[in-house]
Image (cartoon, rainbow, N blue to C red; front, side, top):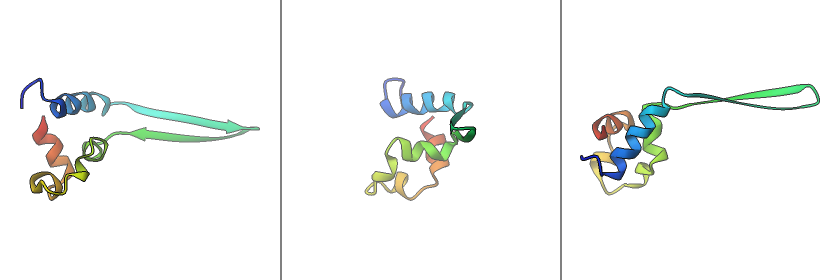
Length: 72
C-alpha cells in the first residue's frame, strides 16, 4: 500500500492516537464520573468500518489486530 492509500493514511493516524488516553469528567452537585477512552489495534477495524466488508474474507474473517498490522 502506498502513502496515497486512504486506509493506510487512516491507519497511520490511528497508530499515533493509540498512545492517547482521553479522560472525560462530568459532574454535577459534587458528584463526578470519569470516562476514560483508550485506543487499541483492534478498535481500528470498527472505526474504519471494516466490519461492514463482509464480502472480503481477508478483512471480515481475520483478527482485527492482524488486519490493522497488515495495513501498516
